[in-house]
Image (cartoon, rainbow, N blue to C red; front, top):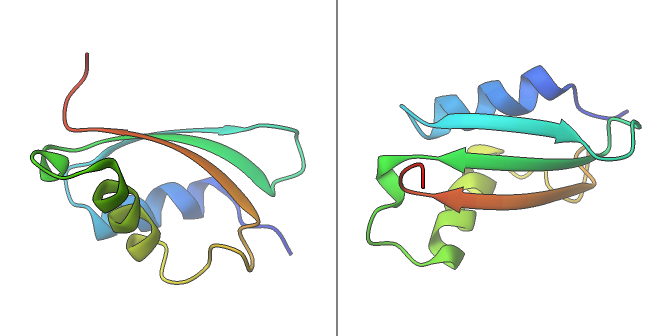
Length: 78
């Protein structure tokens, strides 16, 4: 069963306090999302570290109930 968008947003915000999260269902199946996550907690971290933080916030759901997530991460808005 696919994850609800609100659940994904909630998990990321809980795992990365103060994060702004924008989520888009890429194909309308509730299984393929694109997320933009903006958080000051990303400052000074590599993109790999930033993505690991997001995956950590999702608590191991990637590849299971959440099939695909295209991530864009940044420490502040451009």
